[in-house]
Length: 156
Image (cartoon, rainbow, N blue to C red; front, side, top):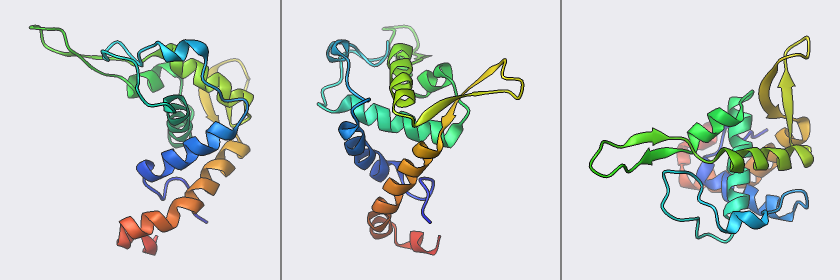
């Protein structure tokens, strides 16, 4: 069976974003039309479906790096900030966007909060069985395109 680890992200994320668009729990908030995705950006996103693409990308990152928290995810979506004549510095992406995306994924039943054995410490978020199933279904659907793009992939 094909898993989401077996296909490249550039083929998996657009198809997964289309699936996210049909899910009723995942919807772009009103404020998302006017916000930047981080302090390192100059303008808001111009794509119409950027929220669904970010949701799909966050779901894939949670699956690959679980358990993972909002801070680590925002650092992954950050970049270098232009400080004029001073040297650039690394800045994190918007935590509010990441937090809202994770809350919507939790409402959809794709992500859950992972805790330690005693249930007292939150370790971060990880995939549920439904989230793993969705990612693997999309990966299985995209696998022929991945094999056409990279012929050596078929032996895996």
